[in-house]
Amino acid sequence: MNIKDKGAVEVTKNCTIGELLSENGIYMPAQCGGRGVCGKCRIRVQNGSLPVTGADRNCLTDAEIEDGIRLACMAEVTPDENELQIELLWQDEENIHALGDESAGEIPDTADPQHDFGIAIDIGSTTLALSLVDITLRNAIGTVTAINHQRSFGADVVSRIQASNDGHGEELQRIIRDDLNRGIDDLVQKYAVPKGKIRRITVAGNTTMQHLLMGYSCETLGVFPFEAVSLKQEDFTAEKVFNRTDLDSAVVTMLPGVTTYVGSDIVSGMYACGVFDREKPVLLVDLGTNGEMAVGNKDRILVTSTAAGPAFEGGNISCGTGSIAGAICGVEIDKDSKRPLIKTIEDAEPVGICGTGVIETTAELLRTGIMDDTGMLDEEWFDEGYELAPGISFTEQDIRELQLAKSAVRAGMEVLVKRYGIKPEELETVYIAGGFGFFLNMEKAADIGLIPREILPMVKPAGNTSLKGAVMALLDENANRIMPEIAKKAEEISLASDTMFSELYMEYMMFDEK
Ligand code: FES
Image (cartoon, rainbow, N blue to C red; front, side, top):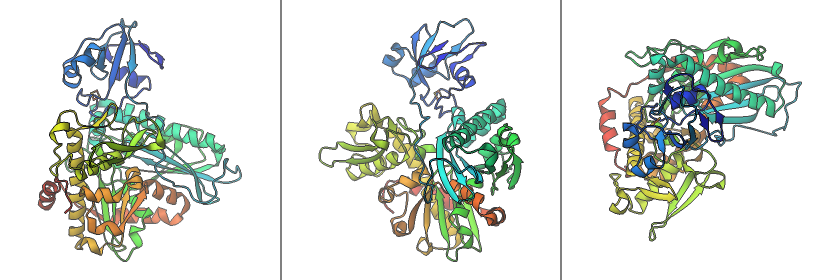
C-alpha cells in the first residue's frame, strides 16, 4: 500500500489501515481509540478502493464517502491489496508549541561539555515535555514538547488501560519509549551534550503513563479498588526504562504518585508550587485530561481527580487540535456583526482549535448571545456550528464536551476546598497548571464559570508544574526526600461517590457566573 508523502508500507496480514499505520510508526489522532466513533482518522483513497463501512456512514457525509474518504480504524486491508494508494487527512501534529518558558537565566546555544546534565520529563496523556537541565549551572536550558502517540489508542487514560489489558501493553510501551527517546535525542543533539554527561533523568506523569512506560500490568488500575503496581519513588537504569544503553551514566528516577488517579505529575506540581511548606493553604488545579487537583499546606494535603476529559487540550472537539502553530487560541466576536476575530499560535494559517481557543470561543458565544447559558446555540448556528475560520467550526457537541469538563473541574475544586474545611477566600494562591493554564485568559474562564470570580485575584497561571517539579528534582537534593513525603501526606477524596460533587456537577453545567 502506498501513502501519499510517506511512501510504501507492506501489508503482510489482514488488518485495519489504522493497525498497519501504527506498526509503521504513523499514528492517528484516534480520540475514540479506533472504535469508529470520533471520525478523526480520515483517509482518502487515491487509487484502488475500500468498501464503505457502517462507521463510515455514521461519521461521514455522502459527499465525503463519494470523494473516497474512509475511516482508517475501520478500513480493512489484505496482503493482496498492494495497489492501494491513500492520503492521510489529519493534521500533522509533530511540531508542538512549547508549553511555557521553563528556562531561567542566560541560555547558551550549546552545552558546556565540562558540565553535568539532567533531563526532566513530564508524560501527559496528550503531550510530552522534556527539559534539558545544566546541573552545574542550575539552569533548564531547553525544552521540547511532542504528542504522546499512544493516543492512537484513545484520548484518555481509561482507553489506554483498556488497550493494555486487551494485549497491547508492549506496543504502548514501545510507542512511549520511541516518543521519549526522540525527545531525548533532540535535546542532546540540539545542545551538543556528550551523552556520558547526562547524570540523571526524572520522570513525572500520571500513574497510567508511568505504568505503560515501565511495562507494568494495568489490570488493577481500571477496577475497584484501583490499585497500582507501584507508586514509589524508584531509581532505574536507562536501559530498563528507555531500552537504550548509550545513557548508562544516568540514573532514571520515577517520581512518586499518591494513587492510581493522582499521579506523580501532581506530586511534582505540588513540590514546584511549594504546597508542602506553606502556612496558608494553596490550591493547585491541573487542567489536563484527568483534572487532578490538590489543596494543602505544610500540615495537611487533600487531592482528587475529576475525569474532566480532553476538551481542555483540544481533545474530543470536532475541529480540536493540540497547541500547534495555527491552532486558534484567542477569539473575539463582534457583538453586532457576530463575526469572529481570531488569533492563532505563531500567527499561522488556522488549522484547528486548541484548549484555550475552546474556552475563549465559548466565553465569546455566551457574551454575544449566540449561545445561551444552558449551552444552546442560537437557531442560525445550531446545525452547522459557529464558523471561526473556513472549515473550522465550533459545534453544539463541542459545547457539550466543554460543559462536562468545566463543570467537573469547578465542582471538584469546590468540593475539595469544602472538604478541607476552608472557604475559597481563605486560599493564599490558586495555581492553574497545564499548557492550557499558561495561556488561559482567566477572565474568560470566570465568564463561563470554570473559575469562581471571587478567587480571580489569587489565580496564578503556573504552566507545566509537573515538568517544573521534575526539573527541581534534578537540582534540589531535598526533593528526593520531600516528594515521597508529599505523596504520603496527601489524602485522596473520591468524587465518584460524593453527593455534594454530583449536585454541584449538575449545577455548574450552566454557563453562567455563580
Ligand atoms: S473513528 Fe477512527 S479513531 Fe475514532
